[in-house]
Image (cartoon, rainbow, N blue to C red; front, side):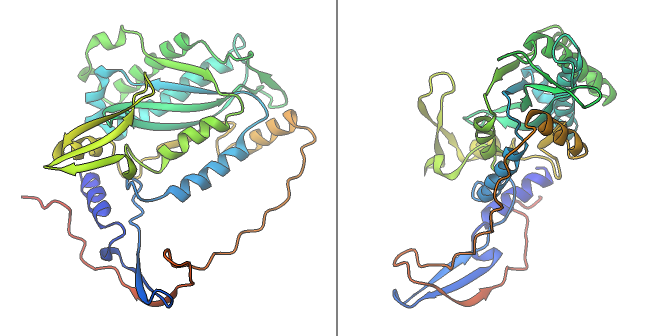
Length: 340
């Protein structure tokens, strides 16, 4: 088992338990103690980081321009998934780099846009029933800045780039990068002859697309509320069928369930969210140029004052709680599964 998998399982099993420490509160009205344990803050934990998703969402809304945005999805062919699973850090990086490189190459061509767009890309590795399915979602501006950065070059209405052309460039660039990484010979030659799948669709202002992506950034594969039962070593969970839109259930052995979950634990320090073009943190002046061109006289929004932290209240009677003790985390951090 990979160290990243061992750590994820260890953190998740300790999350919000006495092992990580916390606080003890007293409710005078109920005459009882209440325990609040710390979260593990592992990015793969289904109980952590929902508030970070909301904070990220607000930052992305500030980037959006007053134009149509597009959601582009790059899917890794099934014949490449075995290599990807065994070389995650390398292949995932190639996937994200080449997806943007394909968009940038065609977007800069005068036939389509003739400028540099902005994009936010997010890696996702699962289907709704937790099967292994690496793909990249990319939210892209419907247009781009000219080479001198003084003119906005709009995309056609409801049309960004030809999906088949993007897929061909994506496939060629991916193959080239796989050669450089020394992994090209591990893939069947038929992969490079088959059509690859790239989906391009308009998403209006982009707010809805970011709301769709936000939950996937700070949680992996499944949330606790989708787990329906654990009986006789079988885990039953629900998911929504992408074709019919109906809820379905699936039951797996506990070992198979854990196997599916661990496929989506990312390598240590891997960045699953990346910013490109005028959205790049290294090209802030380009985004400001685009905003000034598209909105020459923007309305100044009032500065919001940070909200004061609400005092903790009893979940039973809503009375104020009194902190009576700080619980220190346990020093022992034994691995979840010991090596033989």
